[in-house]
Image (cartoon, rainbow, N blue to C red; front, top):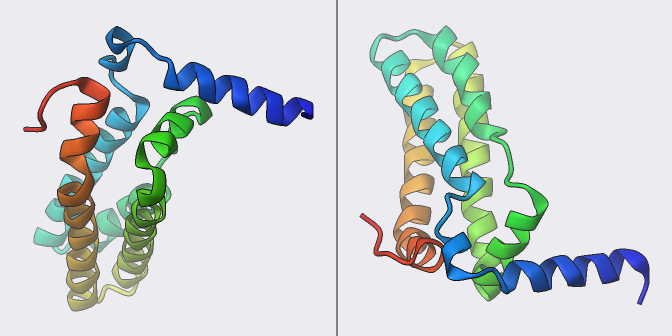
Length: 145
């Protein structure tokens, strides 16, 4: 086994063997999601005031949101298993809708902004409905609120 493969196997083994006490610690993904929520609120406010500059500035923060650290990504991928492509597809839909929203805001096309915002909210909601409850239960040992 080459060194990168060995290192990946060791990291994966350590992340899967994480004790329950550590599993309850907030994941970086939780912080990322909270920031995405704040950005979504800023976009909602911008749309309501037809402040296309705010929407155009904030949408890329949603589209190109930070990723969790590698070890955390590996834990998430191990948990998701065969659902990982679906999870990534939701993230891709989110990215595409936010990019479309930014472009529409730059063009000051309110209807297109609203249409792309709807796509963005739908992508978020679909992912949350599909994955939030099992994710929270697995990583935090409690039912999702």
